[in-house]
Image (cartoon, rainbow, N blue to C red; front, side, top):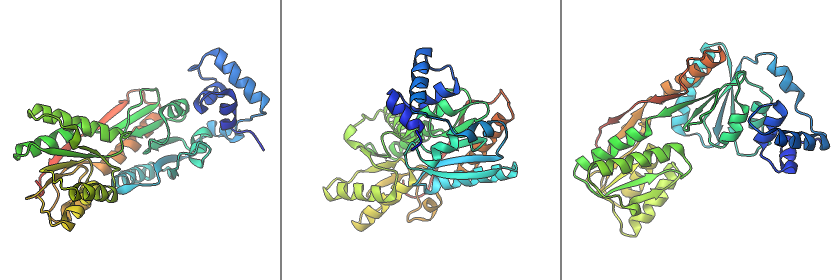
Length: 328
């Protein structure tokens, strides 16, 4: 069986990114490490994919979009914006879901440069791998995180500002017991929204109670289970800031089954302004940001980089605003 880059990394006891640096001659590792990796690669008869060199000499006229298997309504809107901008530019869009396996097709698309550039909507690629892949010939745009590295551009939501505004609005409505229902701990968006929540409480003179900070998974079903358990143990928060609208819908369902009224018994504010937020009963107060436009901005940033423009902002922040409805 032919040796893979993963085999070389395992034998050399280094990361896959370090192997890539060594083989591609990048100066981000020491010469000692490079020689060690090359020696191991030779021992294992590892040969980099021949298509990679060929592809570096010509354009594929394709842009890659990489995402988790769970895609959700927010990323669907972002992807729609990306698709429009990519097709208008005369490129094809290659979509690939990622399951975290380092020998998966998704990794090969970047390692073998089977696309001219890529937009990353997943945190399954770690920062080190993306840094090792990014180059003038393969620029990358990442969403939901910041990577300080050449040829990588971040498109971010003003998560902190939006969460600050939402939490402050809840406190100003007369509530001081404000719960935070968050997403996964390793989510960039979630951490920034949690920071905004904590900062707003401090601004309003409300002490932070860490028992009010609940971790969930950004899904409606996960929030439904979490809040059902909380309600059933007799805890009924005065208000909940949900780190996204999908989880807010889960709160609604759990409350409805227990005859809890929104907003009379529980005030709820979400984040994202998905379509369902306007038509649920009662309509959800939420934080809005421009998802479709965010996708267009991501694609346009990538095309500027492909043209060799050196005046591109490495970080772009998408603004947010409070949409006041009937759940607060």
